[in-house]
Image 1 (cartoon, rainbow, N blue to C red):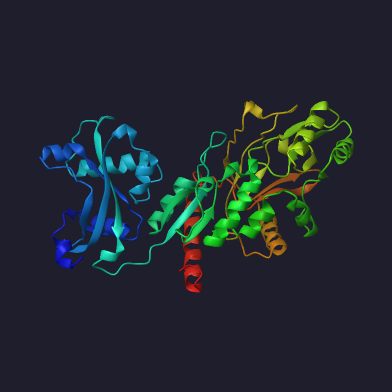
Image 2 (image 1 turned 60 degrees about the vertical axis):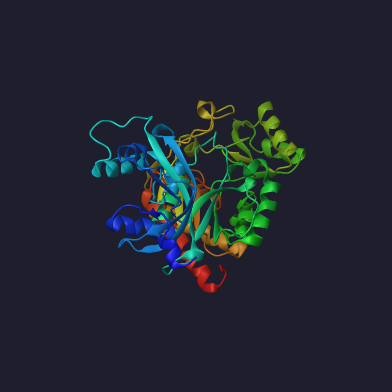
Length: 443
């Protein structure tokens, strides 16, 4: 298509002044794939709605930048705007609410909305489009695409991390989108995959590992697949102990006899019983060691083909004094306490998995402990510093500071509580992308 042909196309004008520069830059980078406008404005100006087809993208000085293809135009009531639309705007909106607030301010500033409240039934014109790099009239940067690996069912616990992370990546000019791991056939459409919240992996670990193998063949994956494979089964705790990391004393049972021996070790005490592969405290209980319920839970875990962990009750855990320390590229960013989860006698407090994360301070001793855990994990797996990690610990009167888990591939990062950590993670992803591109790993 010649420049003359392009100049004859209908114009796509996005905002004015500096805003237009920012929006067109986002389009060219592949970050912005949707634009929205008020239907009432078309009616007021007696203008026809846009239609699918080719349009020329207009720059700050009304120059033609290149061609976009509008693939879909729909009318959506304001009350039915969804996260996918807010995200597609490419302006760093981490929720529909922030999209609404920003657009209400903008449309009121232009006079398209007057002082009256806008109605949930107000129609929004939603245009979906794609930038056609082959028809660019200006130099265009190499697009950077990141897939954030998630799942499709968060009924047990909400995913509060993906939206703020994608919003921060967009502000850095990186196109990012969620990838449901069990619905995506690995192929090299992304420059990088970041494993984040594939939380149903624990019910289908063999399938997840096969998917991870295929993904690794097609695209760079973080955290390192070697680290993920090691971290997926909590038997890694035994290896960390050999590295000098203190952990909760644990009996490990791979069969019925070992289960009985492990329970007998605690006589009439209370124990935590859990599988080595789990999420959301599934098949985890705080039970009397000599109870029928303890034996039944252990047998159920064994029947799933998993190893049983038997640990003494730690009073500080039952009091909700566990801490989770978060690290981005090895640097401590924030810490939370999530409260006690297990009910005495079995099950979860309140009847369901309900974390109540609260920001807390970590001591220098605790941060040092977390750093030593990450270093030990790297030595055991011969992998570089992970992009992110979460170290769960408790300061116990009986055992001292001990490791509960080192979650190195799918921890909830609670980014909604720590926006600075979302930015730090996005910047670290940008750094990893640049390093891979410089090394020729990403073409």
